[in-house]
Image (cartoon, rainbow, N blue to C red; front, side):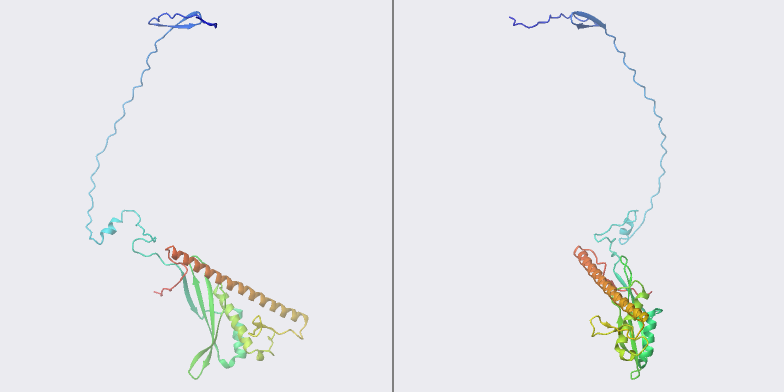
Amino acid sequence: MSVGGCHPPRYVYEPMEQDEELSVYQDKQVVYPVVPQSPMPSPTPEPEEEEEIEPMEEIPQEIIDVSSDEEQDVDQGDGQPPSLSQDGSSGSVPPPSMGWTERILQDPECNVNAHHCFVALLTDHYADWNASVHYTCFRFTHPLENTYWKTIVTISARNEEVKASEVEIAHRHMGRRATMKDSIEAAAYHAWVTLRGNRFDAIRQGHDHHLPRADKDLEDGWGKLEPLGLDSTARGAVYFAYDMVKKSQNLEDTVRQQGRDLKRLQKESDDLRERLGEPRIYDLLRSPLRP
């Protein structure tokens, strides 16, 4: 039974002969000869030349007789770097210590202006002291920080009773200085201003009475005389000198505070390194003796 639609004719396939293949397209029969493919010749590998292997010469091994103490050193001498311990040191050798190194120099050359003014003041107004001046300079160096200087100037008066020099006063500048010369200049200036204030009554009539002096009763710690009876040029020079002194003091306060901040930060850094089990690097080290 069929229900409509198109039924294509059925094709009868004839059996294929041995050397032919039957191809059918609609009602036509097309015969294509089948050509058997000849097998591709496989490439013949070229014979490899055999390399002649020369017999190895026997190298006599050197036998080293070591004791038990030297055995560990010989084992580590195989061209490999020595093993490091947890703290970064090789073996039992401790790592080199790092920190601030202090060098002290006494009585260096003092070819600075403040020193000459200071010596002239001692000669003119402190002749009874028969004073001597000594400078002690401290140089601080560190592998990671800038080198800085501090200086103490000591004024000694001759004591005939004990046949020795007695220290009357000692001054040092506050803050750090980059060179020894700047450090001496700052210390000599502070000593000069202080000694001018101690005997200002005798200096009041001198030619330099308008220069600044130390005065602990004043708010700024130093005082000045008003340039009365002077012409306009001299008054301008005096006021300019006072302005320079005040700016110098403000700059010195800034340098002093900077030194305190650096010291505090270095201490905090060392405390943190110590909590992490690392060595401190900003402590003051003992200076080695000269060989």
